[in-house]
Length: 110
Figure 1 (cartoon, one colour):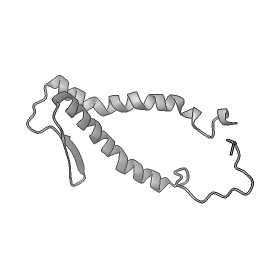
Figure 2: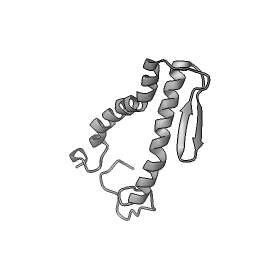
Figure 3: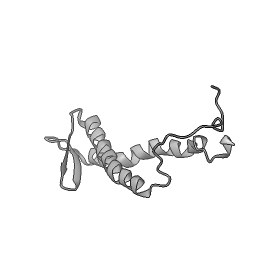
Figure 4: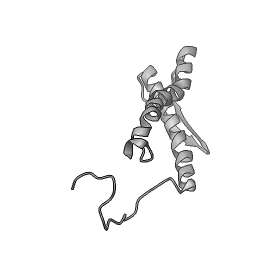
């Protein structure tokens, strides 16, 4: 079968997950996923600077990553503190810049 911009005649979608019309699912995934990504970025930075495996945990509504037994200097602490912002920017900006190429709403697909 050759690639096509339109589905073949008689094609019926069997189902799938779309977040476009499901605001609750989108909100739930964001509330559950983003904090874990932030904690993972802090843990990655702790691992890079200490070369020791960080610990992760949850206490109530609070998720954390830690480097027990380590004292981080001010500069290193700021690097670990800002790691999610830097990492998400470095990864996210190219995605935003080129996302129109992957979007079905883009004129490139017409």
